[in-house]
Image 1 (cartoon, rainbow, N blue to C red):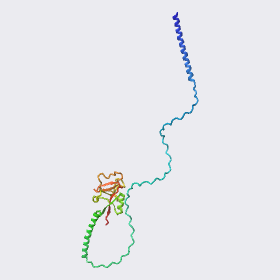
Image 2: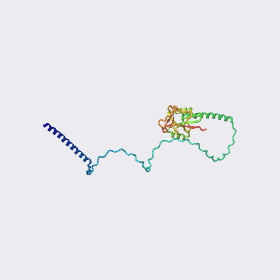
Image 3: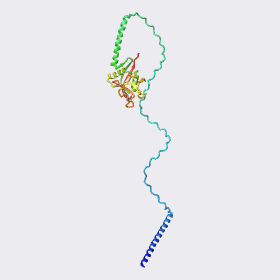
Image 4: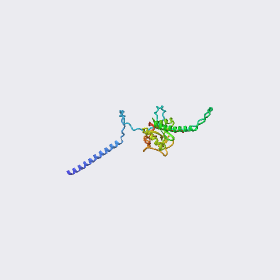
Length: 272
């Protein structure tokens, strides 16, 4: 009898636990449904907080549109003197002047006298010898004392004044000539020996490429043709301003800066 009672009690206990479990689950579902349908209302607005710290500098923005043209500024100060410009070409020969008024007729000459021609011929012959001797002496004076060299057509004179190229050209023109233009080996040798005899190392000569780079011209606007005497590796325009030419005592040519101040050699045409 006791075992039966225990069995029934166990069954009732199990049913009771199951009932409690189902009741708890139902209440939990009801509470979940209630929470899901409940609307949460916002609370009252709080006080304004304090300003925060200054943030880091942002990235530069896009470049804005181009502004309108500004007003014209004031005239600036006068700048320094620029580089010397290219030497202009030698001007052409001027027009022939008007014929002057005829002069007054000369007075009547004295009557001639009898000529002892033989005696005068001997005197003239002696004078010719003296003139020849004087010419030889004059050449000696010009070559040795005055320091002038000459060819059949020209005189050459080294001016011992340190000038830049432009001033040297001007000084030669003032003297009635121009910077020397050696156009053959004989003239080049004569000038180089002239330089050496005076104990000099170099002088300006009349060659430059001021008009067009690397196209060297004589100062009479004629180009170099079959003859030149450039030093090895020259012309090289090393400084970018070497547009003028010097001759060394060896006879070699070298391009140099036109602002260099050295002696120079002029040439003059012989008058017929």
